[in-house]
Image 1 (tube, helix red, strand yellow):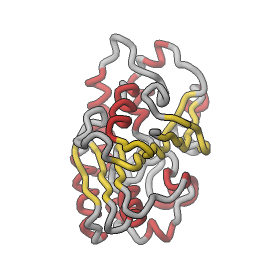
Image 2: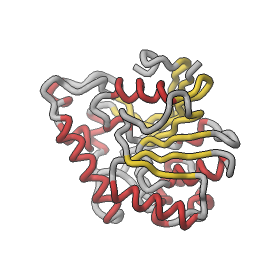
Image 3: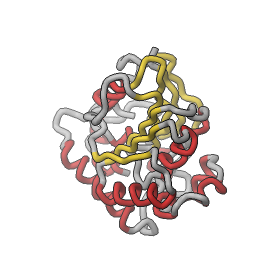
Image 4: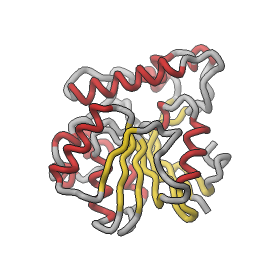
Length: 43
Length: 204
């Protein structure tokens, strides 16, 4: 989606578990949610 | 991160639910929410420098609800123009303003009046004149084409019902050679239509 907008070299740099210890932790696991740091460039 | 809402999805309801949630956080940061908040969480789980956060006004840090750490992907260049999509209480903007220095500019974008009031007050309290905050929708930014070096954001773009429109708008405002440097959530697989129509999952 990000590259469709025109950005290039889009990549996930790092992952987090932002819902760990919250009341949405089970829901996040059920739906396969990851927190990510993301980088992309406009060339 | 779903591409877009289902055809019959109530986008206005989603927008109002998001507005309500973050208005509540702005008014009562110690309330019961489904996400972490604050400087201690940011330092312990996301790798922020606790000393740097402690040096910022509490008005900005106590309502921080980010999901990652955009600054771990590289420092912002001195003199850069930076925008923060969904700037909340302004914590990331204040950190960015210190990085880009007095010749740089940081613009926080948010749609929640309570958060804008907090972030503007925090910037004044911090004595940072190179940061400002604008009320706007992330698909209609009050910025010229090719005017931004770096876009940061932290756990906000996932709340947009039309992410293609968001990224198209970001592409419009970023300068050639500029970049997106943001944290958010992604889905490992596509959601069912029922799940995509569940507004509680979008806001929670």
